[in-house]
Amino acid sequence: MSGDNFLTRLACEDACLVTVHATRGSVPREVGAWMAVFGVDDALGSIGGGHLEFQAIAEAGRRLSGGAGDLLVRYVLGPTLGQCCGGEVQLRFERVAATDVAALRARLAPLRVPLALFGGGHVGRALVQVFASLPLQVNWIDSRDQIFPVDMPSNVVAEHSDPVQAAVADLAPQSRVLIMSFSHAEDLELVAACLLRQRRQADLPYVGLIGSKTKWASFSQRLRARGFTQQELAHVTCPIGVAGIHGKAPEVIAVAVAAQILLTMPQD
Image 1 (spheres, rainbow, N blue to C red):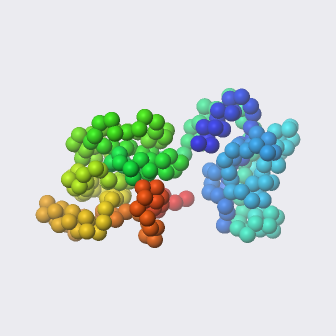
Image 2 (cartoon, rainbow, N blue to C red; image 1 turned 180 degrees about the horizontal axis):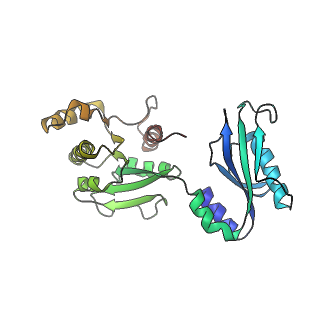
Image 3 (cartoon, rainbow, N blue to C red; image 1 turned 180 degrees about the vertical axis):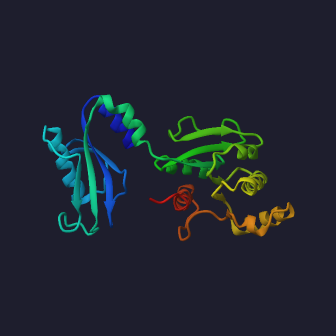
């Protein structure tokens, strides 16, 4: 992760932190995007690339060499920089050192959306790798003990739960839920537990179930027999993944599902 690399290096050498402070109109990156410049050919992170980033790196390098300047600098992307975005960006330039590491760790930490992933199989493992670089806090749950790999991304916590559906009650509010256990029986109980929680608390914005339309037709019939209404069943997404991506390899499925999860997340 670029944030971890930045703070590790900052413990040994100063940098100029360039942050998108404000924007107007069409711009390449959102407020809060950042780039750490250690030299004119040495930067981590990105504020959008192109001529804007080139100019920002040059300005940051000048300040690292002792040059002065205002904290905030305005860039007009169209007339001034020739970028087709056409908007305006206000960048914040600040020299930072080892003494700033603790404060920057809290400040630059991404806001992570909670996600519960039920199932430690091939698709689950592929998803965890994709999720590693996304603004998600993943709770990875399986009823089988010792199913999880030893090394996992820093934003993933593994949990053993037997019965697996017992973990639904303790999920963080606003969790996105993906269900892909090793058994259809477990999948059914997980969907039922999520629907019951949604009925009581309405705090699971997305519940996705891996499988075909045929699998969901069978599950729907069983869930209706348990008293769930059609409106409640409509809250479940099955099959999962954005439309138009073909292929059944775990890595392909993971990309399609991750894209769908991103569509459920707050937009800046």
